[in-house]
Length: 173
Length: 173
DNA sequence: GATATTTGATATGGTCCATAACAATTATCA
DNA sequence: TGATAATTGTTATGGACCATATCAAATATC
Figure 1 (tube, each protein chain N blue to C red):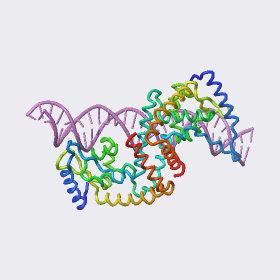
Figure 2: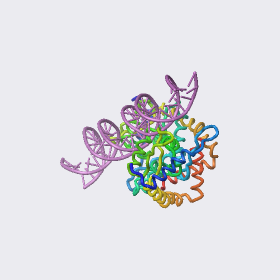
Figure 3: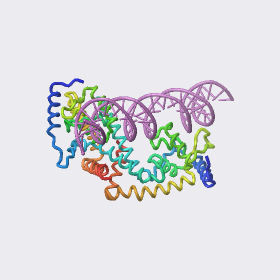
Figure 4: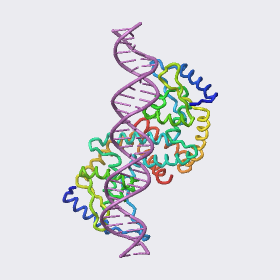
């Protein structure tokens, strides 16, 4: 490691700062200043996304559905008769990585691969009855526990505005 | 794989749907319907975040800085004299995972670890002169190429509203 | 009918994230 | 003071997610 002269000087200053920094009366260390970080959209976006996914997983704990799995079920329900490539690509999932995800859903009898009679290479995806039932329950959980809490926090109008802006970024950026 | 009777029936329907589905005049396959997915905040949030990070990396290609590395440099600049644990934890990075990240920055002479004289267990973090210079250039790139494009897309007022809502989610959800 | 393309699948490597464990150092407190 | 606990940086390790190359079977193309 090499530190230039001025860097060494600033490091001495840093040491002094560390020594001189006062903790609060309760003995807690002073909180760090986020500074420009709190203005960086990417930073705040990432942290918000982590919080939302975290809460999603908690709400779905009883059904054991991850966001990715939930999105697959939703998309297959809305688009019956599509094959793996189509479903995976519209979700931004690469075909190789989609295989294990589907294996999981199929082993839990939530979804089924069916050889297409038109093109015997492809597998058509369908929700099983259990898959439909689970998805229905999942939607209810998301609506009542997850999205509703976001409405509380932001307000209905703001939530819609947020969704619109994020869609714009996702589609046009 | 087991499919219930009704699921089998719906799969037949799915097969028919696949057979009956018309492609566009140009021969392109019909686009899938996102349906409720486009209303799921988590889904849109994740996609927007990926786009923003992707653009960030493109803007920073000349400086070879990832979002995480940039955030470390920003935080160290704003909080000189803090140790690894403090910097890492406020960024949500676990101490073990912070080591390699710092090794990288230090090997590029952007940042330096300095043994604290107060507590000889801890390493105080400082930006080197090169680190300060690179960070200055990075900030300019982010402002002119990255954040400015978001302003174009959303408008200044909307961008600020978006940031506020995301902060609320990140901090209070 | 020979060649190219597509589909699902496997293998594999990279990155990020999380936990356990360790040596050195410091804090606690009997 | 001295034994014990806690903290700091670090290593090792495993899991989740993501990306590429490759393959056999099936289909498309010409």
